[in-house]
Length: 126
Image 1: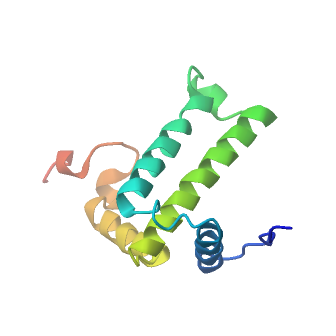
Image 2: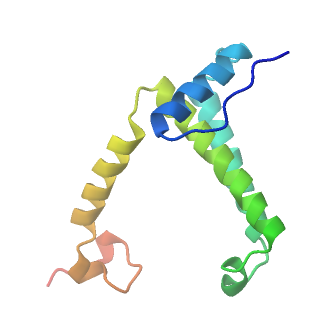
């Protein structure tokens, strides 16, 4: 009987390890190259669009149970591929996200970005 992966995952570190173990148990290391994982990640991110296709902005905020589950499954796929890619490239996802948030806070100061969707390069220099 195949080994079961415990369902409880309580941290990114645990997720990273579980995904690594999952891939190793199936001898998928040769397929899990950064190039292949980025391609798979792109496909999964595109699949995340499908449940929202043809919905209005309002409808997209009030998904049916089936639509919500479809989005949930696609988000999980994106997270799994992203986590596997970060593992292979030795990138700490939380550290990278914290660094990017700090950078974005400098690029998009509240006084210029509040209430608009302009790119930082489109801010006026008053």
